[in-house]
Amino acid sequence: MPSSGLRLLVDANIPDAETAFGPLGSVRTIPGHAITRDALAEVDALVVRSVTRVDAALVEGTPVRFVGTATAGVDHVDEDALAGLGIAFASAPGSNAASVVDYVLAALLAVAAHRGETLAGRTLGIVGLGEVGGRLARRAAAFGLDVLACDPPRAAAGHADHDYHSLGDVLDQSDIVSLHTPLTTPAQSPWPTLGLIAEADRLRPHAWLVNAARGRVVTPEAAFALAASRPVVLDVWPNEPQPDPALVDAVALGTPHIAGYALDGKHRGTAMIAAALDAWAGLGRPAERLGDSAHLVAEVTDSSGGGPDPTAWLDALARQAADIRGDDARFRAALAGTTGDRRAAAFAALRKTYPVRREMDRYTVRGPIPEAVQTAVSEGLGMRLSPASGL
Image (tube, rainbow, N blue to C red; front, side, top):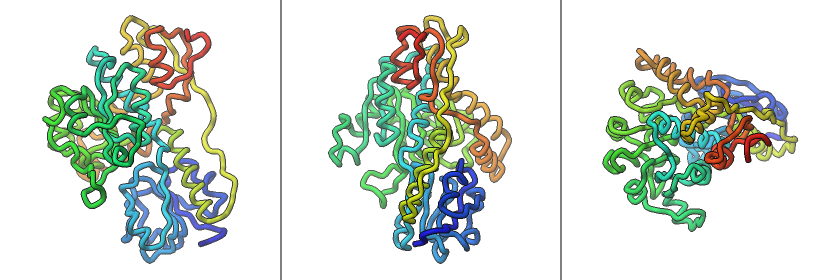
């Protein structure tokens, strides 16, 4: 393997690429969709995000000997093919987990507030208890949600972090179902997730559904049927990046696969791949600091729902960090009237130009916090409490 002077090709949508990878070699950036075999003619290491399909057809016969994806999900990478070609591979598990949990909780609060309902006392079924699902389980309890966990691989491996239930039991008993699985086929896993939710009537009548995992975990037919009868939140789509406009119209909240797009998570993913590449190459370079340590402020005002409704209050506070309604509005506006390739281009542009969002634990709440929601703010949203906040 090269010991110095690595030639790197990096997806242009990866933040701080030059800062992170520059000390390891020469860095060239191009859009992920433009990464082709021809672009790899003089490349030792390739760093991508999820828009680039990495398989033998892309890398075989090229100089590439290391592939990194600055994402937690890896279903866009044929790991077996890379191993067979002797190409090292690294991903960034957990890098965007906090961002996805922020998204899910903000979306649930937005739906509940819109409906004039509460989350407290409901049962949240979490399918997939990895980095995202595990964190969601811990934080959801602060909102008074009872959590049911489903993760057959973890249960089979003997993990004792949760009482694990079958998918059928979770769907039968949950008021809200949130999906956090990888996308796997029967050939890849004894517990495949492709089309995991294929029949709407597997969920309880009126149970909400959130999918921030992979679009094809839910079939199009099931997604339509569920959205017609209860709140459905989709950040991922069965036919992404060309979501069906009728399905976009039907869901309560829809976004263009940006749940994990908080800037902090992106920086974390970049740093993880830079460290993996450095270790592979044996360079021993010190890691570059990415991002900043700034603390932001979320204001408690009369417009923040300071009245007696704790759900509306929490929704208004969460929206200052993760404005899922705004994401939804931009998504619908950008896709309106588009078809085919234009729809896919609009979807990609939304992701590329996504407004800067920071993780909720970057925020300090300024202003009085009603006693009834203090735990939800500090342990659920994860926001810091100023000395004058009442806790």
